[in-house]
Amino acid sequence: MMRDGYVARWQGREYQVSPDGDHVRIYQPEPADGFEEVRPGRYVRVVPAGEVEKLAYVRTTCTWQGQPFIVLGEHDGWLRVEYTGGRWPVAQAMGLEVFDFGVYQGWAPAAEVVDLREQRV
Image (tube, rainbow, N blue to C red; front, side, top):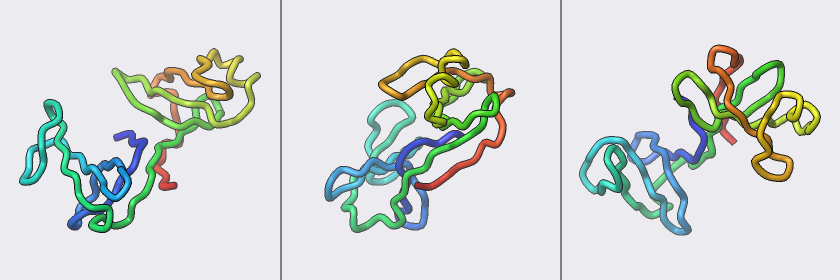
């Protein structure tokens, strides 16, 4: 699973979360007590921030064509990647899309991506 977002431990289990001031929104894919369905396959529970432990940001990194990337998502054997090398001529030569000033993204065949690893920041 490619992850890019906040996670936290709550009641002994790690969840995808979204910090919101003094509260944290905890998400999970199946129904449970205290969780409300926000869309099919997505349930949320809002808890006080003080109840969660080890809040962290998790991102998946990789190497594609010898260059460093963050993995933003996956679909049908492709990975949505964002170049982190900071050199626009390299991004341009790779045919990456300009997403924002200095931000270059593209779709990489998953079979060509190496060194996938999850990092907590």
